Amino acid sequence: MERLIPLLFALLIITAGCSEPLERGKQVRDFTFIDQNSHSFGKEQVVGTPWIANFVFTNCTTICPTLTSEMAGLQELLKQQGLNVQFVSFSVDPEVDSPEVLKEYIAKFTDDENNWHLLTGYTQQEIEAFAREEFQTFVLKHDSSTQVVHGTNFYLLDREGFIRKEYNFSNESYQKELLADLKQLN
Image 1 (cartoon, helix red, strand yellow):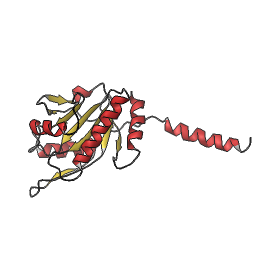
Image 2 (image 1 turned 45 degrees about the vertical axis):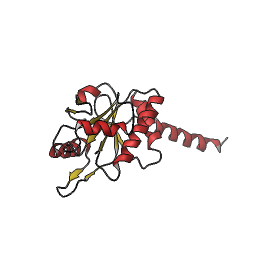
Image 3 (image 1 turned 135 degrees about the horizontal axis):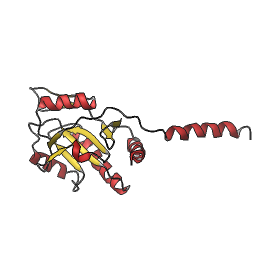
Image 4 (image 1 turned 45 degrees about the horizontal axis):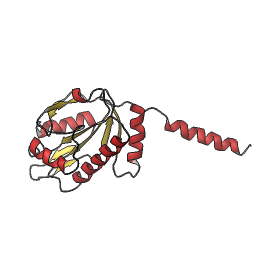
């Protein structure tokens, strides 16, 4: 019995850590942009629902197709789990990514746009400031390049638009972690 007590104590510590509430980070300010269907879309449309955000662009020759594919996988996984979640992808190349271009792009990854909005309708300087100020991530487009340097994390936001956590998609357990965190918010 004496050997069992330390094991039970360790198990208690591990399970207590798993149930800790998510910390509340910065609240994203109100915004209204244009989605892939040429409709106004903003924070007002996601209030009351947890949401997952990321930054991509359609002309990307490196990581964005992988990020978008991962987001589509999350969309399918969370649908299977019966979780009500919105997905928001901010274009970091708004001069190229018109609503029509975004519409063609998303069709390559999903046929369900009901809860996924790819946004544009701002200037390059506005998205760079928005990413930096609201998500504490970087977006930088050099005049001499067609590519945009940007952060690649996914962000989980609660019903009120507070960032609760960010996830690196290259972490093999990020989907499991995100799912568990999202269940805390639902």
